[in-house]
Amino acid sequence: MATADATIVEKAIHSWLMPIASVAPVPHRLALGFLLRDNDAEIRRDGWGRLWDPEEAARYAVVRDAVERFAGQDGEVLDVGCAQGVLQCGLRYGQYTGIDLAPETIARAADRADAHTRFLVADAATYTPGRTYDAIVFNECLYYLRDPVGVAQRYVRHLAPGGVIVVSMFDRAWALRRILRRLEAVGPVVAGARVINRTGAAWTVQVHQPGGQA
Image (cartoon, rainbow, N blue to C red; front, side, top):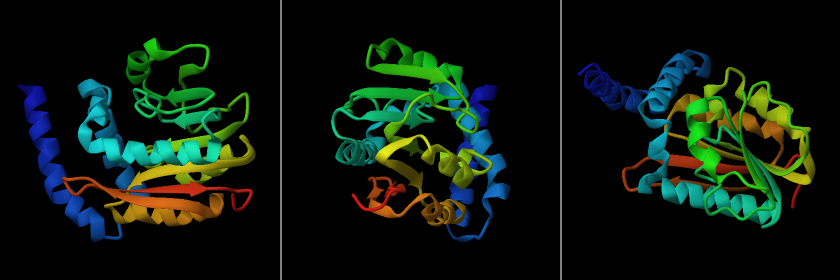
């Protein structure tokens, strides 16, 4: 009963908070507490299992296309905040590494690990890759970090020559749209798209290439 009550409260919060958040200039630092509580609730519920829902499919398709376009079908990919590794399924790559802070989500992905695929429990804010990558993906995870732009900039040094940072971000909140604009500091946007699903949820996908145009 407690779980059911918590779910009802969460839905009620979303129903009135999201319309306000879409237009109100609420700084990310003030919204972070709510975002982290929402993330914790999703992990407790089913380890972000809803990312497998059809409503998420179009966004994942756009992110996969961006990764394959810039990294190639045999590229090396780092998926930061990978959750259950939904992006990895259907992605063509040479080497894939997925990291996530939640052991529950990594455990659900671990059975897909092989010679070309690995999943690690790691904190995106402090993780240091031991290699370079053709594409580093931040798929709906940057806004859970205290310094989203600073973290993204730190990963630039782990890009291979010509490598890209691929960002997907829910854009129906003022604070998150502001993060997207500030990500210009990572490198110029060389490709982008906006994805809207049938429920009206909307995301922006941006490809940043610190080294310049592809």
